[in-house]
Length: 117
Image (cartoon, rainbow, N blue to C red; front, side, top):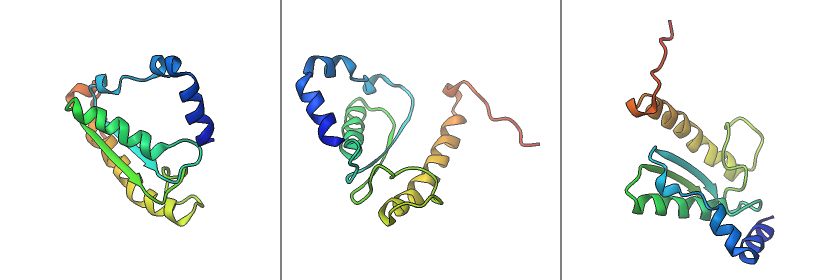
């Protein structure tokens, strides 16, 4: 699948440019997770590219890219996946929960956490 995605972008550069999401204009924190062994799409490279664009714009971004992880890089760490994906999930799943908690409490998020009572 990775080859099909890359070939499609190369064959239709004008459409690719119009379809690009302006990540440097997203003014909220962004969490990115990717794997360099992803054979569905190049999630590791894509995550790095997005992070670099956001960094250049001075925007808050958290990046987790794993050299040996695949398309199954994210998700709960209890699912049956390859060892490299499980290792990645053991790090990025708790990081995702913390990212969501931290950013849901931001005043600019527009929501306040409800009491657990």
